[in-house]
Amino acid sequence: MVDTFWRGVRFALRGLLKDKSFAVTALLSIGLGVGANAAIFSLVNQAAIHDVISGQGSMNEASSTAAIFCRVRGNQFVRR
Image 1 (cartoon, rainbow, N blue to C red):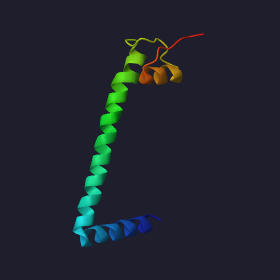
Image 2 (cartoon, rainbow, N blue to C red):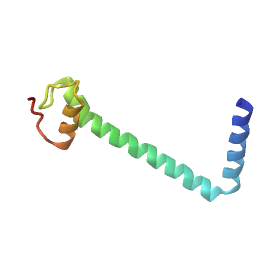
Image 3 (cartoon, rainbow, N blue to C red):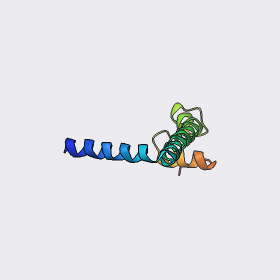
Image 4 (tube, rainbow, N blue to C red):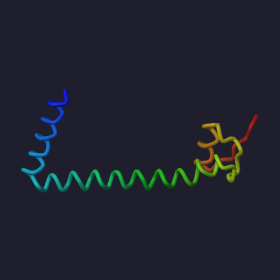
């Protein structure tokens, strides 16, 4: 099983080294995807999740998924 994995890794690296333009495009795409994902997560974490959990937001329901969803959407959380 491990041998099969390393054979696949060697095959992939040979393919990437054979076509340099594809390798650069693939690495740039992966890098941009990871960077965009990290930036969006940081914004959502700070704006919605962190404020709700720390109690600094307009809602005090830290354990409720609905509270986090309403905070992201800009709605006020109303408890019935």
